[in-house]
Amino acid sequence: GNHRRKLPVIWLEMNDSGDNNISFLNATSPYVGQVFTYMIDLLYSNPFMAAQGPDALQLLTNAAREYSGKFTLVVEGAVPTKADGLYTVIARTPERPLTAWEILRWLGPLAEYVLAVGTCASFGGPSAARPNLTGSRPIQDVLQRPVIRVSGCPVNSDWFVGTLAHLILYGMPEVDDQGRPTLFYRDTVHRHCQRRSYFGQKVFAEKLGDKECMYSVGCMGPATLADCPYRQWVDHVSWPVKANTPCIGCTNRDFPDGSTPFYQS
Ligand code: SF4
Ligand code: F3S
Image (tube, rainbow, N blue to C red; front, side, top):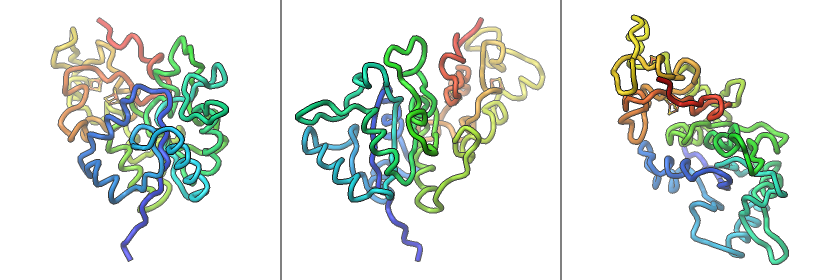
């Protein structure tokens, strides 16, 4: 039949700015309520659950046991590894704190799929940018297993929810050589940019705010894979170039260190 299972999900937020779950809350096709109701079975989530303290930890322990080999591990944020990982503590036992690092190493091998959501979880991102005082690393670095990397700073809700939908309906999506679903990261931003004809005519912006191609002021669209120009953001209404700001390469492996300075004039 066409009845599909809901995806059992354990969701961990580690070292990021919270931008990814805020972006997820903007999902409109489907809406976030529909994601929670029809698509995923949220077993544990430090950003979204009501339970706290020992109750939350109990839910996590139960979920890991009951759904071992069957849950999808969603991770936002990089994993801090300095000071034994104490920069991100997710739970506390009577004896000691449970760090994000430790929980990741515990749950990673038990998950059916691991989804790195956002550029910090995928590649380190701003959390691992110079000088990286917390020793933050991409989650793949501490897991000896494949990770689907849905990068972006933040993630576009469609990239994340679309990947969840793919897992539910068809299983593992096709990914590129960096682990990103080709459904969303196949072409450069530049390829479908609405200012591409200016680029073709070599008509460039002289300063930020000009309407021409912003390659001259540091646009990274030609070196960045994402479908922003036609998918757009927040109910599909706009995206950086349409909002008159260059692409800063937020889905890239070396973001943000490889993108700075963001603007050149
Ligand atoms: Fe390419 Fe950026 Fe120019 Fe658009 S504004 S055409 S993405 S260089
Ligand atoms: Fe990020 Fe560039 Fe899209 S900065 S949001 S990939 S246009």
